Image 1 (tube, helix red, strand yellow):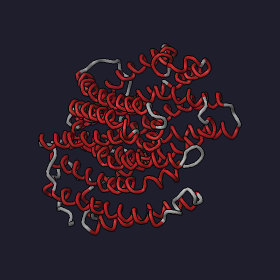
Image 2: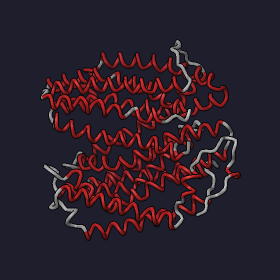
Image 3: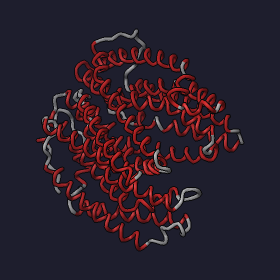
Image 4: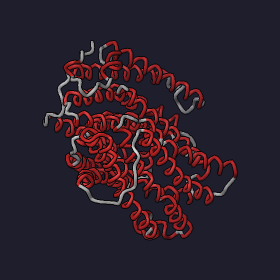
Length: 533
């Protein structure tokens, strides 16, 4: 399977999950609004979800995938299976102990750590504790599922791991639809959502479990032992966990700073929801596919193959993110107006959120490139360097946010975030080059300026088109008119970008058809013909 097909598999599944997530939010607003049960559920769900982001998806997979790939190359499938059983035994035991401890301490955790403000509202506090108690085993399910997803990705089987997260939104949408149309009260809906989260965790675990079995690996439960492989995994996972923790702390600091001005936090959240769509679809796809592919190539000693994978991934990343960044920069206000401007979301809010979204557009390539660069470290079992660079980016972000917020408000925080993102991306790339882990690629170097020109031409055309279509895109026009006009602009922008990208040689059918094709590990980059630009 070609790299582009693998990116499309993961990216398409992520896109589906994001779309279902928007539908879920729509149903939740109809069923719960912003009342106390909604607050209780969202607060309770944050606990297992934060743990999942810190450990299950980020730290664990970044450490596990390279080691699993090494076992496949060195000892074959039997060795990989034994390693998986060793890790599974330790992971299952730790998760069981953690879950029991957290369940018993849940009232204290909610009152002292998660939501101390709820202590004055007995009903909301009790609901939060109950919902969190029901949902916390979701963390165990997702941690085990993350391990198996890493195994599947290392075996070049991406679909099951990519599609599994969709089921969380599907199940919760089902719960909300049933409760909404059945006229259930808010508390019953909260209980239903909590049990739905737990059910979704079990379903996702079952999907990847059966996929791993179909891939030829049957994992048995072993007595937990700190073998040499498990100790190595823990050594690698700890810096990655700290990196994830730094990121989460960074978000909390930005929220604390923004809370000093009314509406700033909400404005950042609304802009982030739109901005996360291209970032999640492209960035997650590249990071998910590149890490196991790169780890396998390095373990096989094929440095040329590894270099080609990195360059083709960056090429693919920029090919998709540069036009998305240009579009967010130019047409952020029409997008925000169409999606959010109704009810209490005023025209003034549209201007503020649109400005923040445009700033985020400038940082989009950086944050996606970070996801393309980090596998170059993790695949070499270096999780310490990205941790250091993440810490540096946090210092940059916090310093700029504190400096800019008094004059620019939420836009200052967004500016600080994108500057920190570019600092992180530059540090990662410069280190890869300095260490000799990034091969020079003439086709890539010649295509990037051409892709930038194509995106710039598209942005200029959009700018004048938006001025010409000012009324159909305004809040005075009917919703359907705005939607059709905006979709038409997006379609026209795509035609312009692709025409110039292919016409200028920034992209070619050969780039998509041949350069993104994964070669056998025994082939070398020298044996490949360069694409005609």
